[in-house]
Length: 200
Image 1: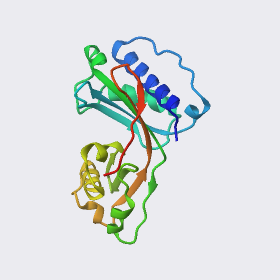
Image 2: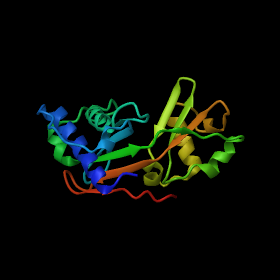
Image 3: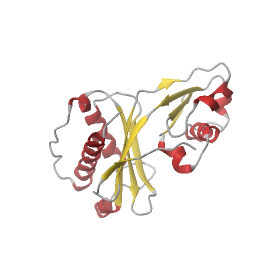
Image 4: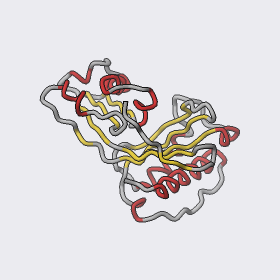
């Protein structure tokens, strides 16, 4: 569990990396505590303000990098999310920055795939679906924001992977869960608060 000051620092790191990438200004040296030097998964999400439409979201589900580096790299990549035009300098004051600090993904093992409906907790879990070369991920805040239950959450994660919506019922499909602490700017460059993820 990350504290509020950790979330504020994580967002500050991401925002600095975004400015550095978009403006071409030097990346400032930002001191971080020891926990930011431990390997951790992280995602950076850019949303328009005030409409809160998705503008970019990139990250690392696995703890491949120290958290500080994961945030900096994810923020840079989020400015050029291939689903959207590259973020322009004129947009920097029209976005809010959100970070998701993740636990390592763990496989969910069940005898019957329908047991997943009782295990997957909306508002707690993020999901990764894998089948062969297909892989999809949805962060814990997504089903809450969309008002989904567990079955719809599983279906949309399958579709994100490029699979049929009911692929979670296929025994060959591997399902992983993870948790996340989510922090976001309330306004562009404004106060950072923790997102409380209430389950459906």
